[in-house]
Length: 210
Ligand SMILES: C[S@@+](CC[C@H](N)C(=O)[O-])C[C@H]1O[C@@H](n2cnc3c(N)ncnc32)[C@H](O)[C@@H]1O
Image 1 (tube, rainbow, N blue to C red):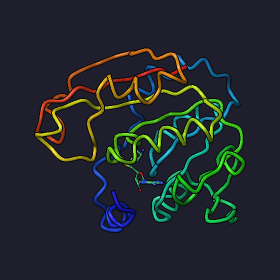
Image 2 (cartoon, rainbow, N blue to C red):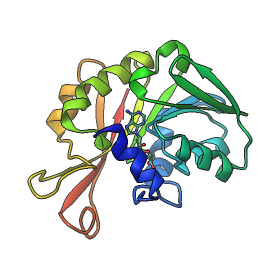
Image 3 (spheres, protein in one colour):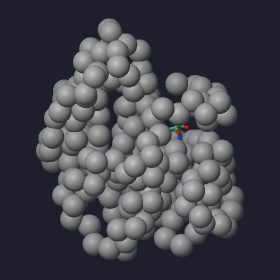
Image 4 (cartoon, rainbow, N blue to C red):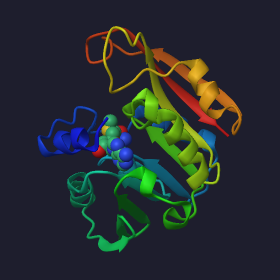
């Protein structure tokens, strides 16, 4: 996906991926990461997800990265927080109490800029990237977070029936991306009611990578 694609999505408010309630799979399975309050959760490709608000309410600190400055401005408005804005290299950082959101391309984000990460919440992120970017993304994420444990939410469906995003990720692909770095557990696999985008049968899967 070209960066322009995502900027246009935000500019035209074409953001069906954005949900108004915290993701039920996050709420149900986040405790499997065994984090203590005050630990820092990284939300890659975060958009303005209300999952960030849920994490903050539960007492976690949050870091995120998002390409669209518009999305990040809306996120802080909706959180009713006034961020301090600074620039580090090609990246802007919007910071407020217990939250740092970086604005820019995740591939420009280094481990040093990101800082400590205790866990990753990876929803609508890996599946948002085309196949040819996925290897680079998963390796980069492991590198900049020092192999932090992850809660990863993916879809699996017949990619011939629908174009992404979201893209389909098979169990074999999960193994290819993560088996060298993590112990992989499939927490849940369930059918998407009505199919993905109402178009094709799909499964949603939650993976715990520790
Ligand atoms: C499908 S949306 C998901 C947003 C969020 N995770 C959620 O659950 O609502 C994918 C997001 O990734 C952002 N994005 C795409 N490519 C990116 C990149 N290379 N670096 C940072 N963000 C990116 C897009 O702007 C978009 O907001």
